[in-house]
Image (tube, rainbow, N blue to C red; front, side):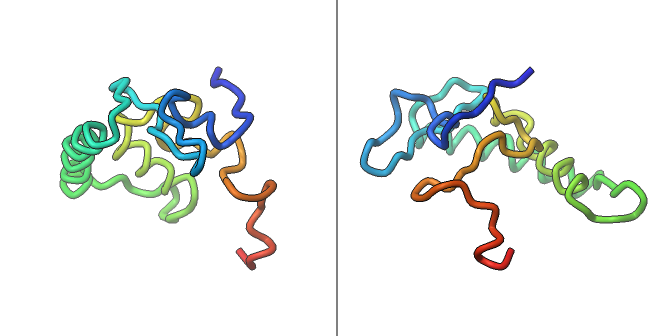
Length: 110
């Protein structure tokens, strides 16, 4: 079972977090802590997965493009790079609003 996320920063490798911005390098299957190296590795995987989707699209269940279908596409594209408490195609386990309290999006009309 995936770990419980307590805070936005749990998505990052702790030693990479900038205390001013609360940003860092996202946990990943490569164990890569260097953001530029991670970007390069992610590009190789995601371009290949996007090419696969072009050749073999993921058909939506029941013919509906819905949240579950979107997650399946995300899972396929990012199945290599993304790891940690929230894997590819998974819903967040904590609120990711970095600068304020928890947000549901309702106050913004979402």
